[in-house]
Amino acid sequence: MDEPTNHLDIGSCDALENALLGFEGTIIAVSHDRYFINKIATRIIELAPERDNGMIDYPLESYDDAFTEYMRIRESRNLMLQGAKKTVEVSDARADYEEKKREKARARSEEKKRERAEAKIKELESELESLEAELFGEAATDYVRAAQIEERKAEIEEELLELYELVM
Image (cartoon, rainbow, N blue to C red; front, top):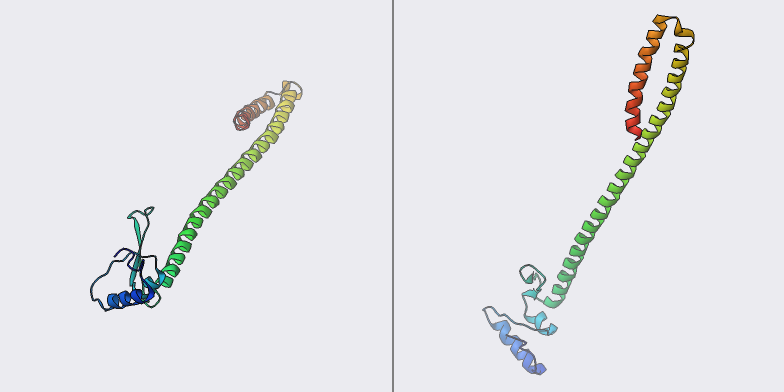
């Protein structure tokens, strides 16, 4: 039935509703008449082209006030969908925030490593200069001490190469 109460007076609408209520079979009616829906409907199917199957089914528990119950169920479903959408948006925003936070922490960590490496480089270069000064000074005639200095210089130079790679 398509808009069965259109163009009917109140008495005719009541007679139609009573006849339909007495009918034992299934009735499919399309109507915008809330009073008619409240009186007759046991289930409301809303056509929704944006949905996958093109409709939303609202099985009703109370048949005394079908349209009001339909609106309540519809509103709660919409709130749930909006909540789920917000949760996804919040989750995405949270994930972006967490990722940026991790990136900043990594950048700070790298910067601190670089600063420590630069400080260690200065320290090692200073030690290397003092070892060379000693090698060509006091240890010039002491071959045992000169060997120790050369060994330490080789260690320092190797460590410096590794530190230079960190800084670059």
